[in-house]
Image (cartoon, rainbow, N blue to C red; front, side, top):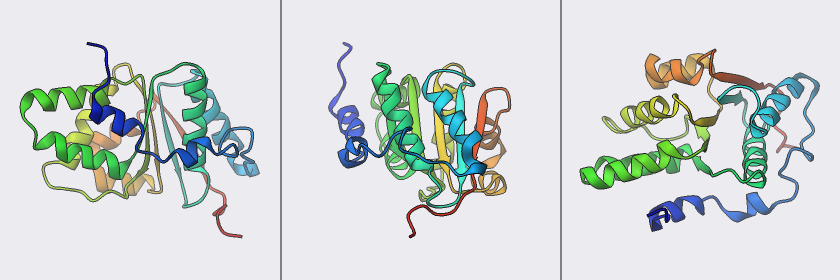
Length: 193
């Protein structure tokens, strides 16, 4: 019927408004270190609908990945895009709900995540992995979205860590050279004075 269900509304509002209303969390207020300028530009291009379909942000804790995802979110919203921002933890929680729901509800919930115009996943690698839940659902999500939907994913994991944690099928979709722009933030932890 075109209306968002209550569970989707809850997901959309899950990320605290403090991050999205913080005026300092945008592209203009991010000062990339010299080695991160290229990654910053890739994030901005993704937010403006230019470049590749997907974006993988990697780097150490505090290097600016979440700041970039929130900046992307704000820019996409300003452009009138339908966008969903989730932490890997909350996405995994949704996978558990999906796995243990009936087939009709399962299709509805999977479709909502898989079909959003833009999906931003923060902190991939921090979620607990549940047998027969996390990896199959994550694979299905990335696989379904790989055909035409934009996805940006941020992680502290190295490429080896991604491969070790998520299998070659998920890893292949995360780093697909034809569809994914890689943005590595290599600077120091900006949160520590």
